[in-house]
Amino acid sequence: DAKTTQPNSMESNEEEPVHLPCNHSTISGTDYIHWYRQLPSQGPEYVIHGLTSNVNNRMASLAIAEDRKSSTLILHRATLRDAAVYYCILSSFGTSYGKLTFGQGTILTVHP
Amino acid sequence: DAMVIQNPRYQVTQFGKPVTLSCSQTLNHNVMYWYQQKSSQAPKLLFHYYDKDFNNEADTPDNFQSRRPNTSFCFLDIRSPGLGDTAMYLCATSRDDPTDTQYFGPGTRLTVL
Image 1 (cartoon, each protein chain N blue to C red):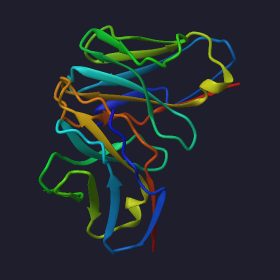
Image 2: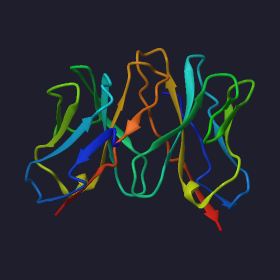
Image 3: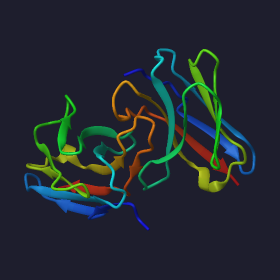
């Protein structure tokens, strides 16, 4: 499985934008980029995913580099509820379903 | 309404005493997964079912087994728990589409004494 590299931790202030980077230099053409987050004492939850184009949904935006070797998850206005571990994960559509291999993730701290 | 339910939420067992964790889903998804998450670590896939087909990860200990009697339910059996099996156990489901979201349950926190 192609691997991802994320910073161990990041900090933000409430209501400010947050840009969470992810490097995936060995990504293959069949790999989708997924982001999940895990709030304290909960199971992970889906945030967003993409293949080549930038993506937006109600939770966040995903900016994918043109060469696909890196991506950035953007939280437009951080809230205290966004404090979580954010995982950037690759899954291949070469299989018939998406198997996720979690890396260590980025611990996001949001200050009031 | 909860879509992936795990029972119990907390389980304490003794060293070597078999334990079964339960997962049920209301999403009618083909694929069900079991992950182990130790303290301050990322979730690690143990195995998954694609319909009735069982797929074990290469490094999952033989001590861990699973059953899926029907689409809705999946069980994780730990035959002889060791102290190192203390962890959060997460169940997840998805459709048979590699782009599809995985839906996770709240987890069962297992403590082995």
